[in-house]
Image (cartoon, rainbow, N blue to C red; front, side, top):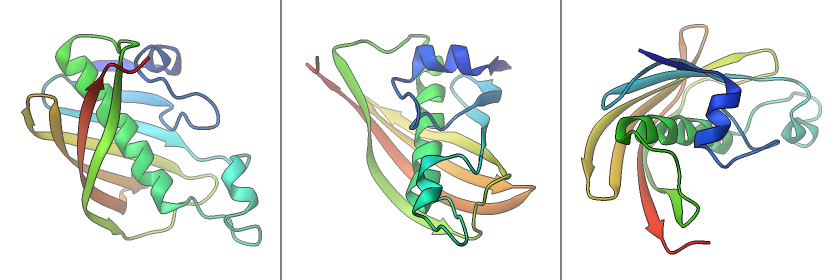
Length: 149
């Protein structure tokens, strides 16, 4: 089982503050699955406008956190780090469901399993939960585009 701290995560994901949404990898089994966390703080910039009276993490950012976790799983499964000439991106979101709001102080547990890989396309089954309760789930497809500088 692989574990990663934020310094190692930064070697695999190009995202930086305020858009790096994975704080730690708890478990990663290359070729199979990942379990990571996002610590949700009231200091996140999006809480200023979503919503000032009742801060809630936007659902699209929960999906983005899941997508970042799939990127880590994909890279570690391939045994390589990102290249500057390839852009790895989210290609599709299917079956997205939001079951519970994510609020400041929550620890969002991000889980993903590889469903299949074909060429540059990866499909993942993902779930985000807080204290064992499902917050969101989706099937995510990711791809790599070459020639990006």
